Image (tube, rainbow, N blue to C red; front, side, top):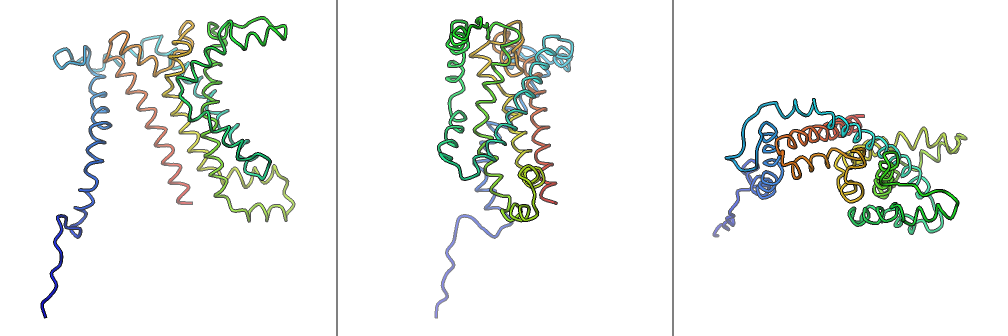
Length: 299
């Protein structure tokens, strides 16, 4: 009886992961071209001055970083970015958390409310920014409503006091739906038996929230905080469309500052140094999230 021949394949699947590397090669190639190479080139560019062409680039060492540290405008931009980030992240966690606890229950129009809150997160930030600029302009609808109430019009976008809160309010509204969905998913992971046992023990709703809901949502809270912080750190469209960094540089955030230095001042090395610092801050946030996730897994 003739032995059946084993069909031959182009890939030896038993050869210590060779097949896996072959299948991963296209994705790794794209990752290297569009992610790793730009990061390496950005880091290299931060030590140079001149144009993007190889002939126009001159090595200046740490000069661009020293210029950043000695530039008062850069420190004002960092202060603006820190204020914007903190004022956005905290409400973007508290508001969706409260809404998620409410919408996790069987209430009327629950699905409709969930969809309504999530809708802003999938809208174009440029289109939304144009709408908000129209809403908050001097002759806009908001000031018209204030006049009806007997309140003098407020120069929202040209005021050093009110311009930044307008951007913060927009960012909170834009991020609310995404974090709401994240928290709703996190609530599904908490066993219902814990709440049933707490009710039998006579625990009040706020005690159940404090001792069951919040500890159960710890990984979700960390994830939402990190993703929201990254979202605020890379904020550009709302500044570009609504305020342009003004008035008096009070709404100039780090990404918009990098854009101005690179494509308005054509100081690419200086902009690359600022972008490298932004990349470092983002990587720190990602590390915090991964470290916290690993600790939760080990518990």
